[in-house]
Length: 490
Image (cartoon, rainbow, N blue to C red; front, side, top):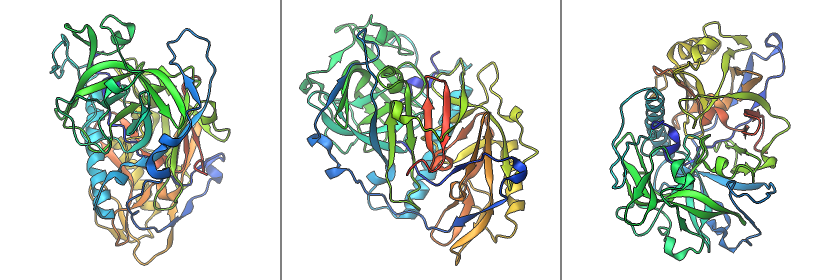
């Protein structure tokens, strides 16, 4: 299916922010009606806290081949630190950073919903690069993606910033020589200086995993291209290379070596796709890491601890509550789950039913968990019911004007803490009770706080990273489930 998101190098900036969460294990009749919100200002620009931001001095302790190897394999675990995109921004105030985040968020949501809507459509974006006979499409827009890490590419390893994204599959990096490359923090990767770089032949099974592979007739090597909804794209050789994560080398990872990358995000060298498709990093390295990974996104306004991601058996949390993954045969990149309802102040909101979030047989509708979307979007009828219930429960708070996409805001100036209604998301098999700071957030430094949900006219609902803050979110692909562990950033 040409419209699949795995060819969407969703700009891999992993948006992770952590907040304390608690999973509800009680019945609704005994669940609390209110909880305390600590009134914190907008967070300042984060700083990079790697040791000298460059792990090149770390010993390379282990080499792993990819999951396509026929050799017997043993599983391992590794952990990497995550940083927010804001850390690569310069000379911006907290207000500027927040406004930019909302603008990126709107662009990403538009792209994701457009991609989902185009699943059964015949509309396509024509491939621009030579050697392509078919069309390609991507649903990920310019600047999307919120979190990144630092990893080594090639042998010897050259360390670069890579965006992380659960909403896309293809791994890619900018490569020299550049026909056209955007500005990035580190030197552009030169494959001729790596002993482990190898091109993929046109007839290779790996090449055929691309939705729309191309072929260089002169060199007979596989080509990839991903086009964005805003007209930007990345194009180049589809290759295999070694990636190094804090001393652990993962060999023969299929990735795009982009020589023409236009209109994309600034700062990072490329993207590490973490979606469900066959070419994502978790799928390629599946056997080595038991097809499991997790992340914890820290709330920067409430904690100085770093966000992080874990691959392997260590990613599993014994305190997590799990909900089954749902398959969309038309679009295999996204992590779909079943949302059955929402409670506010200990009471189920009557206007929110599972039917509003149903994934139908044509691939439309449904609910996805996404690391690169910040603000949770719910189908309009569900959002209106949730918002109205929250307004009733928060009637004791002073209202403030609307802000950007937020239509329910409050003036908390002069306060250090307030009582707010509880909010619980009811997934199949998992009731996720959100901390107050996951749904009432500062939008300026004057005491304005807004209800951090929004409605969408699209059938696709998206659980964003603000609501995931403080949880360890576990992707157990081996058991086809996603888990939420409260207070998982400790």
